[in-house]
Amino acid sequence: MNPEQFVQELSKHNFKLSEKQIKQFKLYFTSLVAANEHVNLTRITAEDDVYLKHFFDSITPLFVFSSVFKADATLCDVGAGAGFPSIPLKILMPQLQVTIVDSLGKRLTFLQDLCEKLNLEGVNLVHGRAEDVGQNKQYREQFDLVTARAVANMAVLSEYCLPLVKKQGYFIALKGPKAESELKDAKKAVKLLGGKVVDLQELQLPNSTEERTLILVHKVQVTPKKYPRQAGTPHRKPIH
Image (spheres, rainbow, N blue to C red):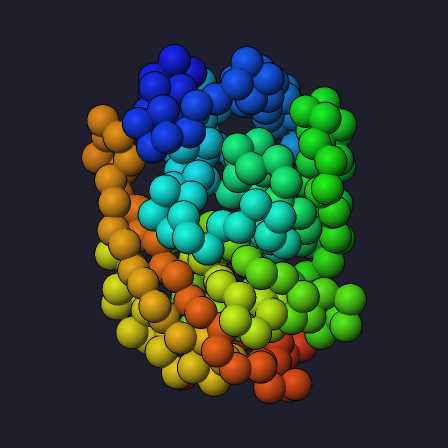
């Protein structure tokens, strides 16, 4: 998917990119590739692949779960790495208030620099592990939307993300193919943490064999105080 095809594909979904937005994605790509030489941000560096597997992939929730994306929503992206999915979402919806949580300082330095280059306002970068941030009053149950892409399996991911979602908000997991079995194993965790799975959509990225699964979890109950557990515990002892 080259930049022109990216623009065309978005227009099919009623997103007409402005010149400014087209430039922002272009600059995002060149910044990512340049920084990747010093910091391990991504294995994907070919332009067509970045536009398809990072940029387009990141914005699929906007097409699939459009009703949950209110213009001035607060969104927290857990383990965003090089800014996926939150920065592409922010470029398309500039009014989104974005908080990015990552445990690696070097990645946050890249994102800080990127936000300045792209003139993005309303992006807050938080250096920390999801488990610690989820127990911090400043962030706990403060967000309308929480996203995570390719961070951990669904049971672990739910413990990272659901404590950050406000009651009646949503957690969106961007997963690879065949995520249904993973979701079955996570049923208990999702319920215990206050969530209810309301939608699961499987899709294929345009003109490719790349399969994806998007999972939408509605936060229907407050998360019990003991979750998330201490850093490292969710990964070592997932809730089953």
